Image 1 (spheres, rainbow, N blue to C red):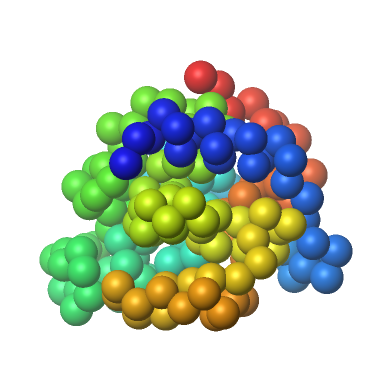
Image 2 (cartoon, rainbow, N blue to C red):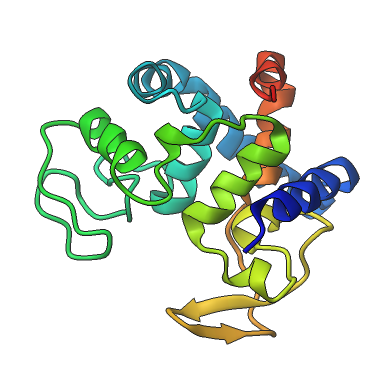
Length: 190
């Protein structure tokens, strides 16, 4: 997978993207919740170097922002995970989050390109590059926007072109979060 091409495609989609009107109420509710937790995400940012809005949208996608669940895969962080990536028990949500960003693929803490195209590419890698390999927009990123209509992996390795992701995508969340906290736009630097 050519990540430079994927980054360019994600940058272009971001530039052309519009949130679907029927999603704005839900997106705004979720975005307020995520922005209100900025201080917790900032503490993980300090340890990992990953921008707090990226941590927030991963948290939402992986576990609906449950503070009892790991960023790695949504399992409880207080005991060994049962889903991949397998991780040990942790003493806090923050320590589990730092581990997920530093140790688990795609090793977000080592990512260096925090332009919006780069951030979206990291987020796409976090969920998997199956959509990119098919030339399709990832619902993990683009659900709730005009960049995504249908198509979803309903289980590992099984893609259903008619399935629809009903969870808000990372790009839609980042757009709405930026309306609440305009400083988020400063996060996207090359």
